[in-house]
Length: 255
Image (cartoon, rainbow, N blue to C red; front, side):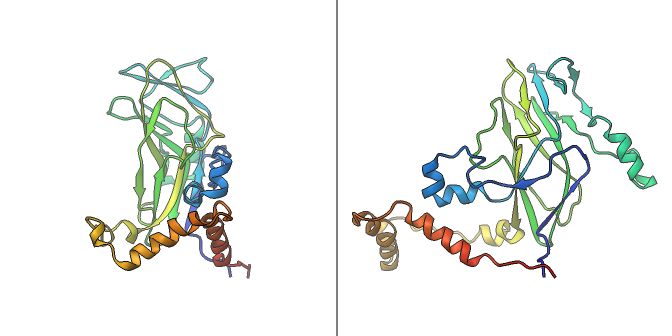
């Protein structure tokens, strides 16, 4: 039996690129040494799914007003709220009568200086008690000129547009977003992981004297023993982690 999906993406803009599994090499941008030997970096890079803008576009902020272009700057339009081209009519043809005219906007200029909300053309729904962390792609360098906000979307309770907010940081050149380059990384998070009980469960040992014998032994095995072995292979922890993941990965069969 195939396990139920943790997240289901719904594409509303048909020209939008489908989400894809995030890449442990950060789309090939990580150094080879990091890919081979640093399990922490590759695990973070590959956790979740990449989500893309639904079209190529340029954004320009002059310090007060925002403009946008979908034709490489040949035409600029002032941004208040903008629909994706031809999407509103497609939405109205498919939607129930009571929802006609309720298509979500593609771009919205927010009240904060240089801030823009961008819709990916998708909706998302998660399994009960799972949320989505919507964040910039992990370890994947983004084009300059903007900073991304992160958000925790309780998408098992709220079924709406999967969007993000960004803040433009320059006024001297347009910001370019490409439909073939990830804008977001969407990561499934159990709601309990960020609940008050979990976040209140922190303990801090204030100094070295608080270390227990077991703590010193774990430190010895993790740090001292590998470095005392002149014949050790590099990246042993990463190799062991990969083997452990392979052993834990269930084999799925279809009914």
